[in-house]
Image (cartoon, rainbow, N blue to C red):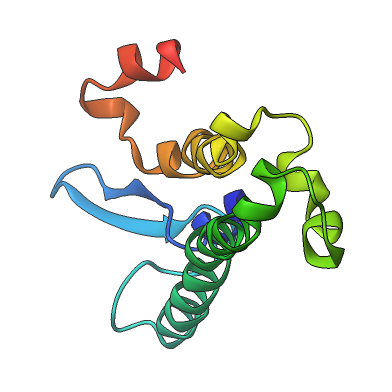
Length: 132
């Protein structure tokens, strides 16, 4: 999901005229869309990008963290209520001391799957990409 969201901002530059050095950037997800503030379709995608960026990579980890913070006393005391039972998928694999590890792991996955799309391979970051 997050990889698709971030592809709405990933552009690739192409040579238009080799003699003048003119280049244009197009959206990787749809090469018909010019990556320019003047392009109406690109501006429309920009609004969707920010809406879904706030919704998935920001609000979901924040919601998971809030839920875990709320049910922490129940999990630590081993008196699982209705809400803690419904959120069992967030904490059942971890010891009570590592209750928030699922949120850390989710952020790690979001970073590895999405944010590395913005690393520019042409300008020296290929070594970093090999590590990931």
